[in-house]
Image (tube, rainbow, N blue to C red):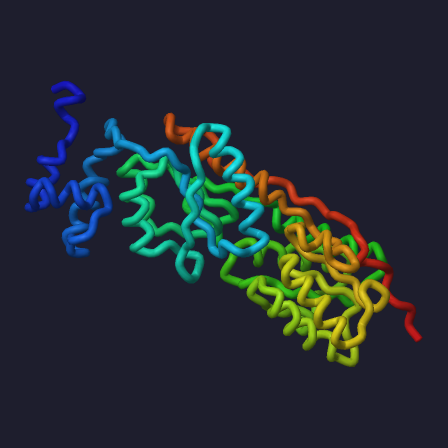
Length: 338
Protein backbone atom coordinates (compact mmCIF):
# COMPACT_ATOMS: atom_id res chain seq x y z
CA UNK A 1 0.00 0.00 0.00
CA UNK A 2 1.37 3.43 -0.93
CA UNK A 3 1.95 6.10 1.69
CA UNK A 4 -0.79 8.28 0.20
CA UNK A 5 -3.26 5.40 0.41
CA UNK A 6 -2.30 4.83 4.03
CA UNK A 7 -2.94 8.40 5.04
CA UNK A 8 -6.09 8.81 7.10
CA UNK A 9 -8.79 11.00 5.60
CA UNK A 10 -11.20 13.28 7.40
CA UNK A 11 -13.97 10.93 6.31
CA UNK A 12 -12.20 7.98 7.94
CA UNK A 13 -11.67 9.94 11.15
CA UNK A 14 -15.35 10.98 11.11
CA UNK A 15 -16.38 7.34 10.75
CA UNK A 16 -14.16 6.24 13.64
CA UNK A 17 -15.51 9.04 15.83
CA UNK A 18 -19.10 8.30 14.78
CA UNK A 19 -19.68 11.92 13.77
CA UNK A 20 -20.29 13.75 10.53
CA UNK A 21 -17.55 15.02 8.24
CA UNK A 22 -18.68 18.58 8.95
CA UNK A 23 -18.18 17.97 12.68
CA UNK A 24 -14.56 16.89 12.10
CA UNK A 25 -14.04 19.97 9.92
CA UNK A 26 -15.42 22.22 12.67
CA UNK A 27 -13.07 20.68 15.22
CA UNK A 28 -10.10 20.97 12.88
CA UNK A 29 -10.81 24.67 12.29
CA UNK A 30 -11.67 25.59 15.88
CA UNK A 31 -15.30 26.42 15.18
CA UNK A 32 -17.95 26.49 17.91
CA UNK A 33 -21.03 24.32 18.21
CA UNK A 34 -19.29 21.08 19.23
CA UNK A 35 -19.64 19.51 22.66
CA UNK A 36 -16.43 19.24 24.72
CA UNK A 37 -16.72 15.44 24.72
CA UNK A 38 -17.05 15.19 20.94
CA UNK A 39 -14.25 17.72 20.41
CA UNK A 40 -11.93 15.79 22.69
CA UNK A 41 -12.73 12.49 20.92
CA UNK A 42 -12.04 13.93 17.48
CA UNK A 43 -8.86 15.68 18.67
CA UNK A 44 -7.56 12.38 20.05
CA UNK A 45 -8.25 10.58 16.78
CA UNK A 46 -6.59 13.35 14.76
CA UNK A 47 -3.49 13.17 16.94
CA UNK A 48 -3.34 9.36 17.11
CA UNK A 49 -3.75 9.04 13.35
CA UNK A 50 -0.73 11.20 12.62
CA UNK A 51 -2.94 13.23 10.30
CA UNK A 52 -0.84 16.40 10.39
CA UNK A 53 2.54 14.64 10.43
CA UNK A 54 1.64 12.74 7.27
CA UNK A 55 1.44 15.85 5.18
CA UNK A 56 -1.64 17.88 6.07
CA UNK A 57 -1.63 21.12 4.13
CA UNK A 58 -3.59 23.87 5.87
CA UNK A 59 -4.36 27.25 4.41
CA UNK A 60 -2.50 29.81 6.48
CA UNK A 61 -3.08 33.41 7.33
CA UNK A 62 -0.31 35.92 6.82
CA UNK A 63 0.54 36.50 10.46
CA UNK A 64 2.61 35.32 13.39
CA UNK A 65 0.62 35.24 16.64
CA UNK A 66 2.33 36.52 19.78
CA UNK A 67 0.66 35.65 23.09
CA UNK A 68 1.47 38.20 25.81
CA UNK A 69 0.58 38.28 29.49
CA UNK A 70 0.24 42.05 29.84
CA UNK A 71 0.03 44.13 26.68
CA UNK A 72 0.88 47.32 28.61
CA UNK A 73 4.02 46.25 30.47
CA UNK A 74 7.52 47.43 29.59
CA UNK A 75 8.67 43.78 29.61
CA UNK A 76 6.05 42.85 27.03
CA UNK A 77 6.85 45.85 24.84
CA UNK A 78 10.43 44.61 24.47
CA UNK A 79 9.14 41.17 23.46
CA UNK A 80 6.72 42.73 20.96
CA UNK A 81 9.49 44.79 19.33
CA UNK A 82 11.70 41.74 18.82
CA UNK A 83 8.96 39.48 17.47
CA UNK A 84 7.57 42.17 15.17
CA UNK A 85 10.96 42.81 13.59
CA UNK A 86 11.50 39.18 12.61
CA UNK A 87 7.92 38.67 11.46
CA UNK A 88 8.21 41.75 9.22
CA UNK A 89 11.55 40.55 7.81
CA UNK A 90 9.82 37.35 6.68
CA UNK A 91 6.86 39.18 5.15
CA UNK A 92 4.35 38.55 7.92
CA UNK A 93 2.42 40.82 10.25
CA UNK A 94 2.41 40.30 14.02
CA UNK A 95 -0.91 39.68 15.74
CA UNK A 96 -1.21 40.04 19.52
CA UNK A 97 -3.42 38.16 21.93
CA UNK A 98 -3.53 38.10 25.72
CA UNK A 99 -3.21 34.94 27.79
CA UNK A 100 -5.45 34.00 30.68
CA UNK A 101 -4.62 34.02 34.36
CA UNK A 102 -1.79 31.98 35.87
CA UNK A 103 0.33 32.28 32.71
CA UNK A 104 -1.90 29.85 30.84
CA UNK A 105 -3.83 30.11 27.62
CA UNK A 106 -7.46 29.11 27.93
CA UNK A 107 -9.84 27.09 25.78
CA UNK A 108 -11.16 30.20 24.05
CA UNK A 109 -7.67 31.12 22.90
CA UNK A 110 -6.83 27.71 21.49
CA UNK A 111 -10.11 27.57 19.55
CA UNK A 112 -9.48 31.09 18.27
CA UNK A 113 -5.97 30.36 17.09
CA UNK A 114 -7.19 27.31 15.19
CA UNK A 115 -9.65 29.57 13.36
CA UNK A 116 -7.09 32.31 12.70
CA UNK A 117 -4.51 29.82 11.33
CA UNK A 118 -1.28 31.74 12.02
CA UNK A 119 1.92 30.64 10.34
CA UNK A 120 3.47 30.29 13.81
CA UNK A 121 2.82 31.07 17.47
CA UNK A 122 5.20 32.63 20.02
CA UNK A 123 4.11 32.58 23.66
CA UNK A 124 5.45 34.63 26.57
CA UNK A 125 5.84 32.60 29.80
CA UNK A 126 2.90 30.34 29.04
CA UNK A 127 2.66 26.70 30.06
CA UNK A 128 0.88 24.92 27.22
CA UNK A 129 -1.10 21.86 28.25
CA UNK A 130 -0.52 18.55 26.49
CA UNK A 131 -3.91 18.96 24.79
CA UNK A 132 -2.99 22.42 23.48
CA UNK A 133 0.32 21.17 22.14
CA UNK A 134 -1.41 18.28 20.41
CA UNK A 135 -3.97 20.60 18.82
CA UNK A 136 -1.31 22.94 17.44
CA UNK A 137 0.77 20.07 16.10
CA UNK A 138 -2.22 18.41 14.47
CA UNK A 139 -2.72 21.60 12.46
CA UNK A 140 0.99 21.99 11.68
CA UNK A 141 1.15 25.29 13.61
CA UNK A 142 4.69 25.56 15.07
CA UNK A 143 5.06 27.23 18.47
CA UNK A 144 7.89 28.47 20.70
CA UNK A 145 7.76 29.66 24.32
CA UNK A 146 9.75 32.71 25.46
CA UNK A 147 10.93 32.61 29.10
CA UNK A 148 8.83 29.57 30.04
CA UNK A 149 6.99 29.72 33.34
CA UNK A 150 8.08 26.24 34.40
CA UNK A 151 10.32 23.51 33.07
CA UNK A 152 8.64 22.62 29.78
CA UNK A 153 8.70 19.07 28.38
CA UNK A 154 11.69 18.25 26.18
CA UNK A 155 9.61 18.50 23.01
CA UNK A 156 8.53 22.11 23.67
CA UNK A 157 10.76 24.65 21.88
CA UNK A 158 11.78 27.39 24.31
CA UNK A 159 14.03 30.45 24.45
CA UNK A 160 15.14 31.72 27.85
CA UNK A 161 17.92 33.60 29.59
CA UNK A 162 20.59 32.74 32.14
CA UNK A 163 18.52 33.76 35.16
CA UNK A 164 20.66 31.95 37.73
CA UNK A 165 23.83 33.60 36.41
CA UNK A 166 22.06 36.96 36.50
CA UNK A 167 21.16 36.49 40.17
CA UNK A 168 24.77 35.60 40.90
CA UNK A 169 26.10 38.66 39.04
CA UNK A 170 23.75 41.07 40.82
CA UNK A 171 24.68 39.77 44.26
CA UNK A 172 28.42 39.54 43.56
CA UNK A 173 28.39 43.16 42.45
CA UNK A 174 26.96 44.20 45.83
CA UNK A 175 29.37 41.94 47.72
CA UNK A 176 32.30 43.47 45.86
CA UNK A 177 31.11 46.92 46.95
CA UNK A 178 31.29 45.74 50.56
CA UNK A 179 27.65 44.87 51.31
CA UNK A 180 26.93 41.90 53.55
CA UNK A 181 23.30 42.53 54.55
CA UNK A 182 21.71 42.02 51.16
CA UNK A 183 17.98 41.41 50.87
CA UNK A 184 16.09 39.94 47.92
CA UNK A 185 12.56 40.60 46.67
CA UNK A 186 11.73 37.79 44.27
CA UNK A 187 8.97 37.35 41.74
CA UNK A 188 6.25 34.68 41.93
CA UNK A 189 7.79 31.43 43.17
CA UNK A 190 5.82 29.36 40.66
CA UNK A 191 7.83 30.92 37.84
CA UNK A 192 11.09 29.16 36.96
CA UNK A 193 12.85 32.47 36.24
CA UNK A 194 12.02 33.73 39.75
CA UNK A 195 13.35 30.61 41.41
CA UNK A 196 16.52 30.67 39.33
CA UNK A 197 17.28 34.31 40.22
CA UNK A 198 16.81 33.63 43.93
CA UNK A 199 19.02 30.55 43.67
CA UNK A 200 21.73 32.69 42.06
CA UNK A 201 21.44 35.27 44.87
CA UNK A 202 21.77 32.55 47.51
CA UNK A 203 24.69 30.89 45.73
CA UNK A 204 26.64 34.16 45.56
CA UNK A 205 26.11 34.75 49.29
CA UNK A 206 27.22 31.23 50.14
CA UNK A 207 30.24 31.61 47.89
CA UNK A 208 31.18 34.66 49.98
CA UNK A 209 30.77 32.72 53.22
CA UNK A 210 27.45 34.36 54.13
CA UNK A 211 24.57 32.17 55.22
CA UNK A 212 21.39 33.46 53.50
CA UNK A 213 19.02 34.98 56.06
CA UNK A 214 15.42 33.88 55.32
CA UNK A 215 14.11 37.04 57.00
CA UNK A 216 15.83 39.10 54.28
CA UNK A 217 13.96 37.29 51.51
CA UNK A 218 10.59 38.60 50.35
CA UNK A 219 8.20 37.44 47.64
CA UNK A 220 6.44 39.76 45.21
CA UNK A 221 4.54 39.47 41.96
CA UNK A 222 6.87 41.42 39.64
CA UNK A 223 4.81 44.62 40.14
CA UNK A 224 6.08 48.00 41.32
CA UNK A 225 3.49 47.92 44.10
CA UNK A 226 4.86 44.63 45.42
CA UNK A 227 8.39 46.02 45.38
CA UNK A 228 7.31 49.02 47.43
CA UNK A 229 5.31 46.94 49.89
CA UNK A 230 8.07 44.42 50.58
CA UNK A 231 10.78 47.09 50.67
CA UNK A 232 8.84 49.04 53.31
CA UNK A 233 8.78 45.94 55.47
CA UNK A 234 12.48 45.24 55.00
CA UNK A 235 13.52 48.86 55.54
CA UNK A 236 11.44 49.20 58.71
CA UNK A 237 13.76 46.78 60.50
CA UNK A 238 16.21 48.10 63.05
CA UNK A 239 18.88 46.01 61.28
CA UNK A 240 17.69 46.93 57.81
CA UNK A 241 19.62 45.72 54.75
CA UNK A 242 22.09 48.02 53.05
CA UNK A 243 21.23 46.59 49.62
CA UNK A 244 18.27 44.96 47.89
CA UNK A 245 18.27 42.71 44.84
CA UNK A 246 14.88 42.93 43.14
CA UNK A 247 13.33 40.22 40.98
CA UNK A 248 12.76 42.66 38.13
CA UNK A 249 13.05 46.36 37.34
CA UNK A 250 9.44 47.14 38.26
CA UNK A 251 9.99 45.82 41.77
CA UNK A 252 13.28 47.71 41.98
CA UNK A 253 11.46 50.95 41.16
CA UNK A 254 9.01 50.06 43.92
CA UNK A 255 12.02 49.88 46.26
CA UNK A 256 12.86 53.43 45.14
CA UNK A 257 9.33 54.50 46.12
CA UNK A 258 9.63 52.94 49.57
CA UNK A 259 13.07 54.41 50.16
CA UNK A 260 11.89 57.88 49.15
CA UNK A 261 8.91 57.70 51.49
CA UNK A 262 11.20 56.68 54.36
CA UNK A 263 13.82 59.35 53.51
CA UNK A 264 16.40 56.69 52.69
CA UNK A 265 18.75 57.81 49.94
CA UNK A 266 19.65 55.62 46.94
CA UNK A 267 22.54 54.78 46.71
CA UNK A 268 24.02 56.63 49.73
CA UNK A 269 21.97 54.69 52.28
CA UNK A 270 20.66 51.83 50.17
CA UNK A 271 21.89 50.13 47.01
CA UNK A 272 19.34 48.64 44.62
CA UNK A 273 19.76 46.19 41.71
CA UNK A 274 16.98 45.24 39.31
CA UNK A 275 16.60 42.63 36.59
CA UNK A 276 15.57 42.99 32.91
CA UNK A 277 16.93 46.44 31.87
CA UNK A 278 13.66 47.77 30.48
CA UNK A 279 13.59 51.41 29.45
CA UNK A 280 12.33 52.90 32.76
CA UNK A 281 15.48 51.53 34.42
CA UNK A 282 17.55 54.01 32.41
CA UNK A 283 15.18 56.90 33.13
CA UNK A 284 15.03 56.38 36.90
CA UNK A 285 16.77 58.79 39.25
CA UNK A 286 19.35 57.59 39.95
CA UNK A 287 19.55 55.34 36.88
CA UNK A 288 19.06 51.74 37.98
CA UNK A 289 21.86 49.20 38.12
CA UNK A 290 20.30 46.05 36.72
CA UNK A 291 20.87 42.68 35.10
CA UNK A 292 20.17 42.99 31.41
CA UNK A 293 17.96 40.25 30.09
CA UNK A 294 18.11 40.40 26.27
CA UNK A 295 14.35 40.50 25.84
CA UNK A 296 14.23 41.71 22.25
CA UNK A 297 16.86 39.20 21.21
CA UNK A 298 14.97 36.41 22.99
CA UNK A 299 11.80 37.30 21.08
CA UNK A 300 13.74 37.51 17.82
CA UNK A 301 15.26 34.05 18.34
CA UNK A 302 11.88 32.60 19.32
CA UNK A 303 10.21 34.01 16.21
CA UNK A 304 13.02 32.82 13.93
CA UNK A 305 12.80 29.35 15.44
CA UNK A 306 9.02 29.20 15.09
CA UNK A 307 9.27 30.15 11.42
CA UNK A 308 12.06 27.62 10.81
CA UNK A 309 9.91 24.89 12.34
CA UNK A 310 7.41 25.37 9.53
CA UNK A 311 9.89 23.70 7.21
CA UNK A 312 10.49 20.63 9.34
CA UNK A 313 12.33 19.48 12.48
CA UNK A 314 15.09 21.67 13.92
CA UNK A 315 17.98 20.04 15.77
CA UNK A 316 18.31 22.52 18.64
CA UNK A 317 15.03 23.91 19.97
CA UNK A 318 16.27 25.07 23.39
CA UNK A 319 18.40 28.17 23.85
CA UNK A 320 19.42 30.38 26.79
CA UNK A 321 20.77 33.83 26.00
CA UNK A 322 23.33 35.39 28.32
CA UNK A 323 22.41 38.03 30.89
CA UNK A 324 24.84 40.79 31.84
CA UNK A 325 25.18 43.30 34.67
CA UNK A 326 24.65 46.96 33.73
CA UNK A 327 26.18 49.24 36.38
CA UNK A 328 24.49 52.60 36.83
CA UNK A 329 23.90 54.98 39.69
CA UNK A 330 21.82 52.96 42.15
CA UNK A 331 24.68 51.03 43.75
CA UNK A 332 27.56 52.23 45.94
CA UNK A 333 29.54 50.99 48.95
CA UNK A 334 27.44 50.61 52.11
CA UNK A 335 27.21 53.63 54.43
CA UNK A 336 29.87 53.82 57.12
CA UNK A 337 28.71 52.55 60.47
CA UNK A 338 28.34 55.18 63.18
